[in-house]
Image 1 (cartoon, rainbow, N blue to C red):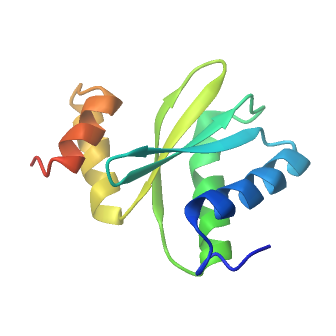
Image 2: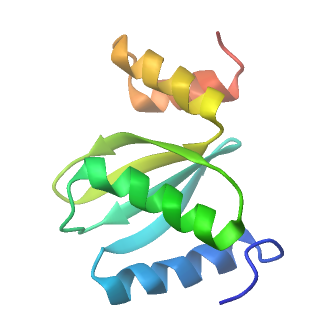
Length: 114
């Protein structure tokens, strides 16, 4: 595996996606929402609440850096997981809990909304 500290995000995600596929976790991809990084896991047999910790621990193990995650959405085909700082994840969780859509929460986060 390429060094995650020096690899581009596309190269890193491609390698992580291969690991996820071999492990039977699903098809992994990434979306950028402004500066926000969203990991998308498609066709996973795992429930959404397990995917966030799995994504964060995988990134932490590979990069040596602490990250936080929160499940943004989960339907029968895909789960979207925000990977961000503790503060950003906390803010998005609060906004979603207050009724804001996850996509609007990411836009608000990117725009610096309070």
